[in-house]
Length: 226
Length: 252
Image (cartoon, rainbow over all chains, first blue to last red; front, side, top):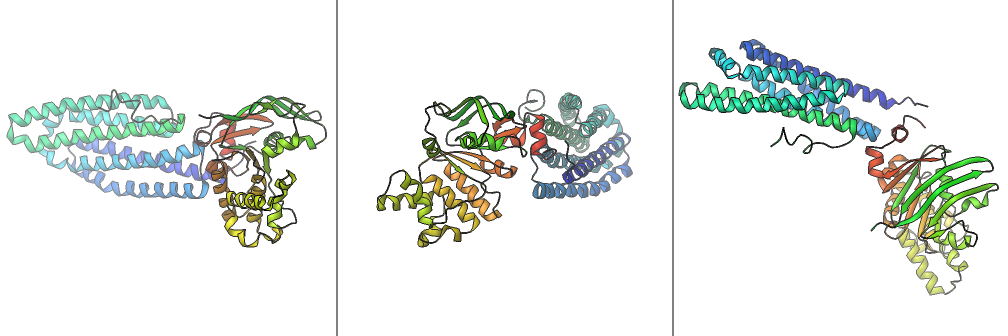
């Protein structure tokens, strides 16, 4: 016989908040990628302003987890979910910060839109957007097939970033007048790469919820971490 | 090296025709705390009581299979049950001190076992009370009635009384369920200390208590042993859905 638990409504509330946070961060990524592709400073400013709401959700989720730990003493899958919710929340907040950091670097690119396309930074943006759509689905459904996609896409983004880094360095050596903007692009590429890294953390957290095994530092060491 | 102190194999227990324990096979390690959990009527207390043959006192009880302590099947015909219960002590949910002095409560068992020397008894009483973490609270009033102690103190006195006859195993049937949080916490600390010298098996309805103090946890349901594993595993990643549902409060 299944019991109704007051606890379940708290867990549902937490799950709802985590999905809300994830969707909000997704919007930030979609916007920042569009702002970068079109060098749209006003959209970039909107991304910067929206971060406040993400920070607000971050604190809400932390407090909710704290409350559940203190009052419900969760165990087993409940415990794993709440531990993971805290970690995922943290990762999402960092991803949100990175989206803001990218947004802040869009205005200086005003006169260099051609360079953005030539170096392929727009493609990395699109790939990151694509990868994060999988993160949203994974967080919503806990279907680990999305996790496999995330790992694969994160590895591709990492490779692309490496390629861009070498190209940008060559550009910087050859044309001293583009050093500042090229450095900016290099940083943006690295920020996208970090977003994909945090996304794999989220994949590990969901995998922990589902399977109960800690996979970080083990599973993807070959293709993600060096 | 971990040694198995208790070992049952294909054990069945019937109350007349009703099967109360269904094919229990378990190995309980020496000098560890093993907790039995499960909803009321799942067989956990019945199983605990069968480990020192307390069920012999109930009419119509029939036991099949092996219940080994060390290398001896305790249901063999030539087993001396009094000696068995000396080796396998028991503490109950409700503290049950004798209406005698604190000293006499502890000295009773050793006296029955033939120890009458005053100095020796003094030493046994002091050691037992110290091991049960109650010595400091009662050392100045050993002659007072045990019934004047608080509920928590009475329970520790009963633990001391069990320890006084030098058991190897201590069975505890919800030893802290009638106590306030502070007394409960003292009993829990005591249990953790006692495992250095004794093998402890505890039945508890308090899941957090099982999680806090036990090394291994066995989950019983409808007379069956559903899952038995390290406590850490049971409470973070249990293998069976029934265990998960029970410890998370989804049924039971």
